Image (cartoon, rainbow, N blue to C red; front, side):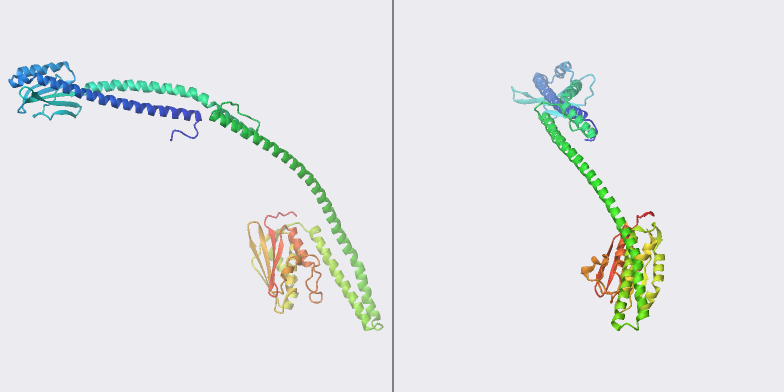
Length: 494
């Protein structure tokens, strides 16, 4: 029901329900009694009128037979004693009006012919018509007609309605008072439950209990609620202990990881410094070996046989390759230690610089390099040039007989830029697509494709320094597609 709002307190809802139910029951009971009283009064009135009509009809038989209108009128005048009868008439055997009576305040119109025998109800009146029968002669002498109004019945029903209204109001008042009193007894456990639930929800205190020792449904509810709180309290205590233990373990592991991280950072820094120093210090001996070997060839070529000259060439070539390997190793170590601060970089400008650097190699093999619209990213500009140049240079180096075709495209998703370098080169076998980014990983002989095998490892390290990932998809004999990502949320600080 609309007036039973969900926001009303339970006590008010119960009071409304009880009072409304009682009111409906009392109204229906009073209506039934009122209707019964009305029907009883109406039946009694009709019965009284019929009795009066029969009695006066028998009394008026001589007056009708002897045509004594005065005597008949006198008989009818006896009806003045009954205030509810407002009109009466005697019709002779021919159906003509013989004598009539009307109360002082009545203007009731008499029917021209006698109505049919029985009771008739119309417009607040009740009429009774009975046959005047002479038992001595077994003949119908005439018809006696009576009419009464419902004034007494209306007065009685009005009084009865007042009494019923007073009784109804009194009953509802008593019902309201008793419902309020007894609800305080019934709803007390419910209020305790509500108060306890609110306290537990606000304070997270599961030690609260609801008092109660009754054996009814509310007592069962209170006991079940308390048992549930016991279980929750035990589980909460167990969770708190587990939380504390976990926090202690996490703290210990954090301290351990921090210590290991510091050790690892220190070790990495020492290794990078060692690689830099070692590669730098190795440069001079290699240059000395290469120089003296070349000097030996120039001075003593005429005195050496062909095998000796060939051996010296091998030594010089090995020194050059070792120097290249040391330079690449030095470059790999510098990716993480000698990187520049991140700035906003236009990838189109980077691409133009790379094409300018590789112009000779591109022209020599007739390579075709195309690229779509390239974005601005936050990156180390020098390393981005190195990344693009290594990927395009590899595509030119590992080509087939036909001219290399290299295409660069970029797509954008919610959090990063995805770069795509596609070529039509020799491709990579599926078993090498993961290891191709390892340091010193070579898939071909030095004589076939020169290099140190560090280029893609440097590319991957540059991408990882920028917070991205790198992978390759390839089909042998058809080409490769190198992918790498750069987050769009990078800041300008490294």
